[in-house]
Length: 149
Image (cartoon, rainbow, N blue to C red; front, side):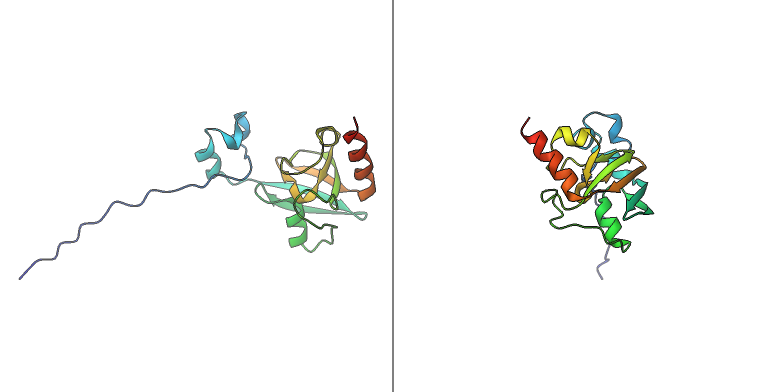
């Protein structure tokens, strides 16, 4: 009679995917999520407290570093204006009161971003922050003005 012998195969390697956005560890390295910290930044899940002011009401959101402020606001049932969700149409403008966001996927000019304006659909928190929705016209006027500079 033949003896069946079971030999366990080695465990498959743990595969970590590249994070979409930088985390606390990757901020220590200027190369952040494009550099050598990929493995470590994928291991740390961060979330931030975001106070969103909309239509005179402040709502505190707990936003993961890999989700946009808009997506979390919509998940929480807030009726925030939006359209394309790609950072192009400028329907979800906001002014950053404090804190910081990564909106590198958006189409705002550097001058507008440096002035503290943001598009909620491409704003990933990189710290606790306070952000206030603004009329679309306010951002459009500034974006057009800086486009001519």
